[in-house]
Image 1 (cartoon, rainbow, N blue to C red):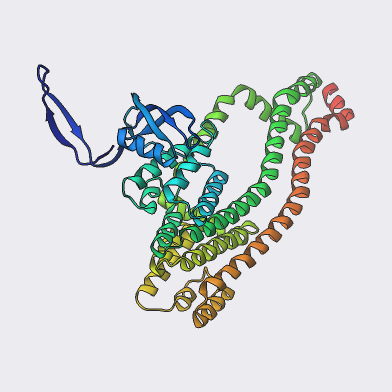
Image 2: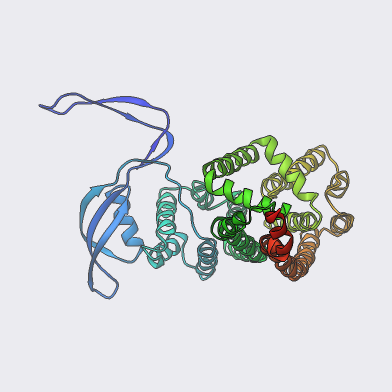
Length: 439
């Protein structure tokens, strides 16, 4: 059973037992799940056994019957502990596959509960434990009378507002399978773009990490050996060499200051960026970066256009669409601009006019939206804009990757080569060093 949030004290009396008091809660997302062991007969007449998690005995029987099993015996094994709204996370690939398969089953005429039950049985109990739990909970809620969009809304970490709103529109319009198919395509496109951006950033991170590791090794292990050799000369060393030896001595002797300072800077910056003011500052700064700023801007615009098109096509009201795409933009500057557009549209302005008042939206997009309003095909125009920006993003990422590789090689060479040259400078000037030592 799903117990609720407002705490109510109740009294229970059993004959010959002390008085027990307990509290029941309303709207706190508490679940008392019970594990049942069962024996049942399948469609072929074969007797099968297993375990089933359910809220109560009736719910367990209903779940088993929806899987085509005729229950012969049912026995309660154990009750799970009360857990307060445990958060579950699901891999993006698993979510896409779940959405696509559910769409196919519903389109084939299978009922929602039967489709969810089939997907539950298909999930790997070890690798897809989180998804399995969520499907079980959603199935139980749907069987209890909730709509599908209300059931998945209880898991916001997995099903965001975009997902829930599109499912809600699909249920109201009787187009759930079509909406789920669109959602799967949208999630696949978003995952592809995110993967390309991550892969473009992976190479620089690896090279910089290697450069830091090599630099640390040289300063801690190699430079001290040269320092001892040069100390025997008894002469004044060149400035770069002396500076490098001093840095090496500091790193080996005062390493705890370095670690403490690095941790303090890391946690300080992280705390600042998590604050509302820090997030606004970081988002504004990101869009002003020389190379990455235009790339991030195109990513935000592509996400805005594709999400807007999908929601409008699914029949979601425009004000709700603007509210959802603002929260899904991923940048505070874009989100603030979309909120301003929503206010203008609510006051009666056309979408193209409201967008034109915000500098964040490019002129090409404004003309496409105006044309879409004139022809009644805003979703098609925005979809084309999203495709156009995705192609530009791919081209920019390819160019950036090809540009970053030589730059990183130069960076690595300057760091390591600078240390090597600084160490060998006294050897190059060995005559001067020996002369100074004799004098």
